[in-house]
Length: 99
Image 1 (cartoon, rainbow, N blue to C red):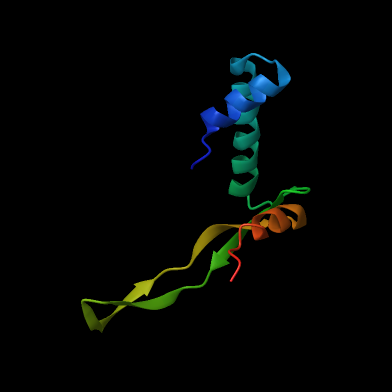
Image 2: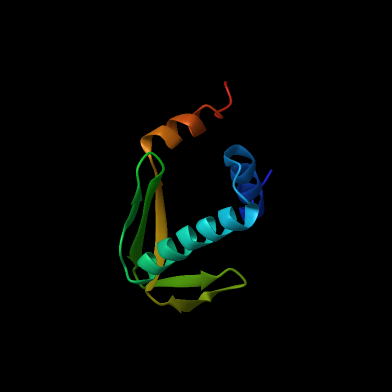
């Protein structure tokens, strides 16, 4: 199952009694500010949730599986990395199948 922004808005609206348009505006503004900070290269830390950070991937040489003799240069680029917070990691670990 996938949790969409719409699902999030509906859940928050039902739990708080706020109008969905108000909740949508708050959720959208939150996401906009996170994206804006990351675009500036800033780190976004949300306690008990996780940390978003911008990392630069090094340039490297790749291979085309159909033509392995030919090198394909892959340029350096900025990537958003996410590291889950302690509480989230603990909850997700509960999904690990027991062997």
